[in-house]
Image (cartoon, rainbow, N blue to C red; front, top):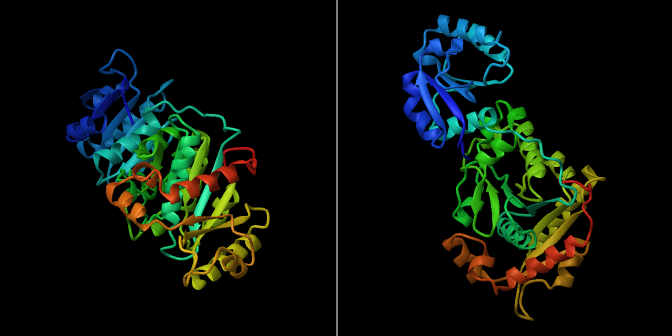
Length: 383
């Protein structure tokens, strides 16, 4: 996220240093409350005014913000602080564009809050050829995260270029995609849940990080309270905006149902249920697929992917035919076991396709992706 060329005025000396960290590329000036009367430090109106409420008398600040509301084209205002007076907040909300960032917060928090106000906010048209792929595990440890990463990597090869493919980790409590890829986890859906309607392409850009394999990653830091502090509206909004921005969105979906799960799945083009070749996992995959078909009869048909197929001809694991008999349906595909390649790639950080491009996992996932790409997108849009 870059604030290059943005003119940002910071009111309150206590916020100046953090502001310089958050807005490294911006043209920054600081001043007192008198500048809110229109005597801007720049030759023209700033793109954003950030106010440290703790450093300004509340009565004078409330009056200054109220006066701004009478201006023809007031700049966006970001107010920071805690225990803010109700009158001040009411005057702030009367402005065309404003927001409140509650203390305590960090420089990245400040940058994310400011992005939606200070950065250009284009409204990109939906990309008609884009698709959304959702991947979930039938049981824990089935390898759904690995498969989701390799699908994103395979799609990035087939859709080269920037902002073409995005992988979203919605395992908000204990997601491991960022760790597998050695990438940054910048997504802060808990904070965004306070105003999910403000999630736009600029905020998405602040949340995204570049991942090895040629795709972008949206992932949050591990947080045991994340499912309690993240609203369904925020999850669905991040998916909606991602589908506006990217040609392909791949989602690592938690296997336990959340309040937003069915609505999220209903907008997908592909839903892959990953199962390993054990009887309990196959029975769980069969049940999960049946539940989704019952609850979403018009949704994407669940397709089971059999992971960790044995290379040997004989052994205790069920064959593909035996597995499909237990599933009571045909599998969408199978992925051959290659523990060494998977472990090495996770330890090195990055998809298997980057570190072990000749692994059977890479070939099998590529074949699966190619088969599914033949079918048209369900909705004919990025959803």
